[in-house]
Length: 107
Length: 413
Ligand SMILES: Cc1cc2nc3c(=O)[nH]c(=O)nc-3n(C[C@H](O)[C@H](O)[C@H](O)COP(=O)(O)OP(=O)(O)OC[C@H]3O[C@@H](n4cnc5c(N)ncnc54)[C@H](O)[C@@H]3O)c2cc1C
Image 1 (cartoon, each protein chain N blue to C red):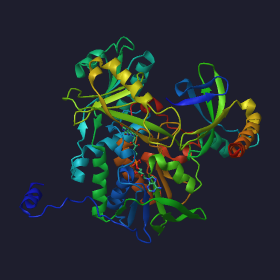
Image 2: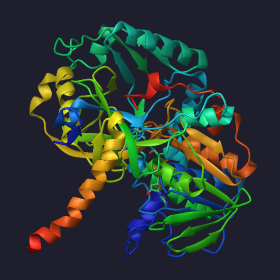
Image 3: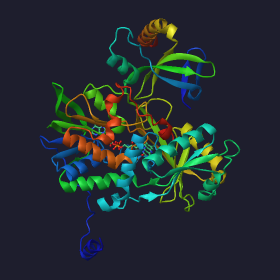
Image 4: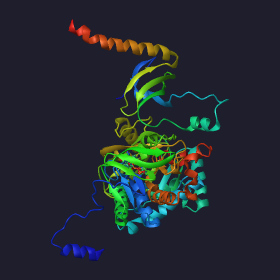
């Protein structure tokens, strides 16, 4: 069974989640051109690679962000949008821990 | 045909006949290069030669011909779409298919079965009536039928669907057919090869050269090729190719899965689709039930299979046909569907001169193979798209003129 980690409810079966599409920021509707707005409405980054996406944990009604590679289907991390900044801090911390590990083992 | 057979029988040696020349290295330049040796790319090569006399053409296929979605689909051919433009277009394809075995001199096992789209709710019935009226208006044989007529065509069907979702009626589409999918690729390949087009397998396009907004060549794993006209007909690989030329499109890739049961004696004559139960099924000429469902729920560039899919599909199959509970599923697979927001393809010219797109075929492109080959050949030969495919142009998104086919294409492919 495939699993995904909801930032609030922990690791759950994938069948509890709904894919919400690519995370995108809208251009300023007052200043952008009609063509740019139409491109924003319709076009997507369809090529495979690392993507930031919206996911929804439906039993608890939680929307959150997942970073996932659409070629390998590996999720690198998930977090609430509000925690996006904290998540960046965490990522650095995780990296540090990985670097430290071999040092610990050599003891 | 009998004479050829006799000549063959009297010969001492019987080498396996080749469908097309086995070529290794492409030439330095071509008038037209087609990326993708699926049905669509091969059909375009065939009609470029046959209808327009353009034969200095190379079809480049990174794997083997028909190994993409052409050889993975469930081969339903029909024209009971929702928009008049769509119905006209797919109807033109059905008409070519009906005479295609003859034309390509290859038995495509084209078999007209009749096609029922079952309705389990009043709102589904409304969509069926709508589709029937649009179809009739355009001259396509579709009508709404009641449970009696469905029971007559398929007495094995449990009309109550185990009491879960009683069937209220259906859209019946008489021309609905199935065919031998890889035969279509082979037939067009042999035809194109016979006219002088060249087909290269194991030949992957790595990048496309665009200068001053015009295509001037492509890089492949077998060297550089100069050309001013490139057709991209790569279905599930489209976003990778459009990225090479910096073209944005709405296309995203979702896997679409299918499976077959062990073979049985023939019992299912028609093609059945249920949107509510997310199932469609037909019986192949080999006796297997060929079954599919709707798209995988999220984007992945992969042809992996999942257990979720067979579990969901077979439980709904059992609602419809409880007697199948002992029948085994023997094969399961997936293809990568190039999905558009309006469930209609993207065909024709692009803002890049000489770069033509035949894409957005999602879960519905097999039936369109002949007509898309024909109309894309026309587009390339005249550098202008025919009226028949105007509704599918890439710029429809910028114009907010979408071709809404979701109601006719989301489960019944
Ligand atoms: C499970 C499933 C069921 C379906 N059922 C139906 C159905 O019942 N009815 C229907 O009408 N449609 C159906 N479809 C959709 C249909 O299969 C496709 O829309 C259609 O086959 C697309 O044909 P094509 O020739 O455009 O692409 P493909 O057959 O996918 O060919 C594209 C080719 O391009 C090649 N390629 C990609 N990138 C490169 C590169 N860089 N260089 C060289 N070559 C490259 C690939 O290897 C591939 O062979 C189904 C699809 C699936 C997956």
